[in-house]
Length: 124
Image (cartoon, rainbow, N blue to C red; front, side, top):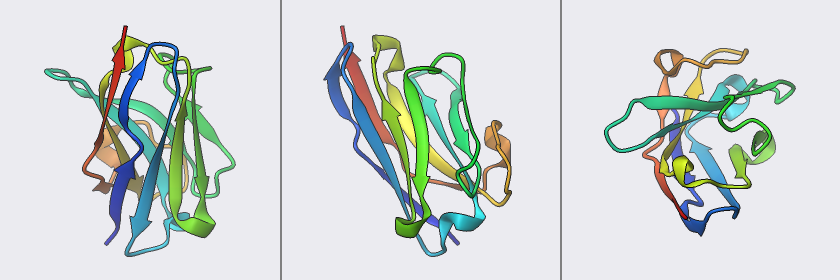
């Protein structure tokens, strides 16, 4: 069993930056592919970014490519999402998730564990 806790969300002006963290407990994250998703009110939970268990490969959704960066530090069991040049349309609850696979996972249905989410609000 893996427990995931996100932090780092908040209110920021358009063009600003935030760094989200996802801390894991229960098991080491080094055996899991990790991802970030987001869900705006009334919308589906959408893929944002994924990283392999070793951190050697990443993949970002087109909507955030060049602005967001996923990374991980297995030594401290934490995954990060650096978000720059934020836009109002980035406003959502952001979730991290863990999948018992080594590769990149972009579909939410393949993730086994989820955090409770952290709110990100970008004002115009």
